[in-house]
Length: 613
Image (cartoon, rainbow, N blue to C red; front, side, top):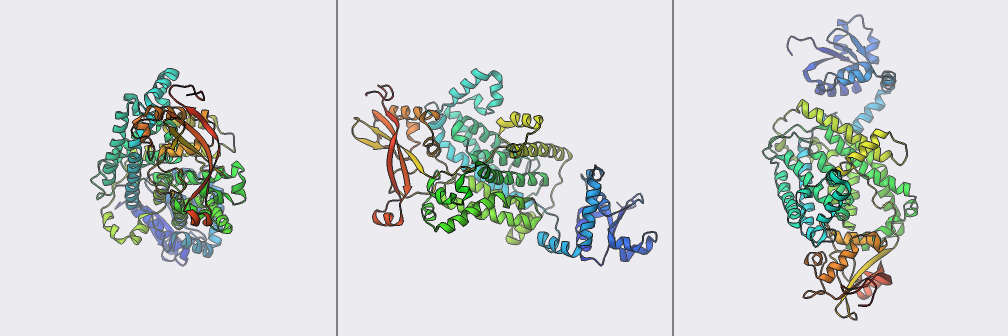
C-alpha cells in the first residue's frame, strides 16, 4: 500500500486501556491503518483540542474526514476485508446513539474495563486462530463417525433388514404409496437406490472407510459431506431406532463440519487452511442449543424432581443403561446428589451463556461442560453422545491455548493458512442466516408466536435434520419398569432372553458399552413406559424370535435357544431397583426385581395372540 493515503487512528498513549485495544486493532487492520498516540501527533492537528484525545479515540480517514468515539471504532473495523458492513450498521436506526452511549460509559470507567478486559481476554487481546483447533476437532468428529457407523453395522440386518423389526424396503414402499414423489424429500436417504440389508451395510462400511480418510485429512471436506449423507441415509431408514439425541446432534455437527474448511484437496493436516470463524461460532451456537434446550425443557416440563433437586437421586437408577458407577452414585448422600443436580441444571441453563463471551469466558464454559460430560460418561451409556459433546467443546477454545498446553503441536501450525475465497464466505454467510433462524425458531417456539416464514423454513428443512430440538430427561423417571422376554419349547419351562446391556440378570454388573449403542436395548427402555401397541416393532420382534430369525437373535446378548427356536414367547413387566449396600454385600446382586403384570400374552406361530397354543 505504499504511496496510498491511509487512515490514521490517534489514541491516548498515557491510557493503558487505550494502548491495549490499539495493539489489538493494529493486528486486525494490518497496514490499512496507521496508529499514533496523541502525545506524538497532537501538534500536527492543532484544530483538535487536546481534551478530545483524552476523551475518545480519533480516526482521520483517508479522505481527511475525522471521526471520534464509537463512530471511529466502527469505521476502523470496516477497514478489515469483509467488514465493510460495519460502517453501514453504525448508520442503522438507534445503533449510533446506543453505541456512543456505551463508548462514553466505557471511557468514564477505563480502570474497571481494563481489569475486565484482562479478566476476559488475558494480558493481551489476541486475534484467535483456529487452524490447529479445527484439525483436532475434525479428527475427534471422524472418530465419533467411526464408532457410530461401526456400532450400527452389525445391527442393521436385525433392525431394518429383510428379516428385521422395521424392514427398510417396506418402510420406503409405504412412504411412496402415501406421498408419491414427495417421499424422496420426506425421507432423504440413499436407500432409495437400494434398501436391502447388503446395501445398508455397504453404507455403514463406506462410512467407516471415509472416517479413516477424514481423520487423515485426505479429501477432507468431500469426505465430511459423504459421511453426513451416509449417516443421514441410515438415520432416516433406521426409523425409531436411529432417532436418538446423539444421532441428531451428530447430523447437525457433521453438516456444519462440511463448511469449516475449504472444499479442497488437503494432503493430511500438514497444510493449514483458513478456518471459517463463522462456522466456529455456529458450532458454539449448536452446543448452546443442545445444552440450553435440554435445560429449558426441564424447567418447562414442571417436573418436580428437577424443581426440588432430587432428579439425580432417581436418574442413576432409572436411566436406560446405567454403569456400575451409577450404583455407587445412587447411594451417595442425599445432600451431595442435590448439589450434583444443581450442577447439572447450571451446566445446561447458565454455563452455555459463557460460550459467547471472550476467550477466557469460553474456556471456563468448556471446563464446566467437560466436567459435566465426564460425570455422565462414567455413570451412564449414552452411545457417543458424551464423546461428541466433549468434541464440541473444542470450538470454544483456540490455537493459542492448545499450543500452550501441548507445545509439541505447535510445529503442525507452522505454515501460513490459505485465505477464504469470496464464494465460500458468501455460502457460509447464507448458511449462518438459515441455521441461526432455524435454531432460534426451535428455542423460542414454546414462548412466542413466530413468523410464518421461519416456521415454514423449519418445516421444509426438517427432513434434513440440520436443526433439531433437544430435551434429554425433561421428565425424570422415578421407577424402573423393565420388559423381560422369555421363550419356551413346551409352554411350561421358560428361559429368558439376555439383552446386550439392559438390566436382566440381577447379579450381572452394569457395564460400559459406550460409544457403542445396542439399539434394541435402548428402545426397550421406551417400550417399558408405553403400551405394547405404541411400539410398532414389538410384535415383529416376538414373531422373529418364534421364526428363529438369525438377524433378530443377534440383537440380543445371548440366545437361550441356540439350536431351534422356541414354540412360545411372552413378555412380562417387572420393576427393577438397585440393591442397597447391605443387600449387595449379602448376595452380590446389583438389582432387585418384582414382577408386576404381563406385557404381552403367550404367543406362538400357530395361535392368535393370547389364545391357546
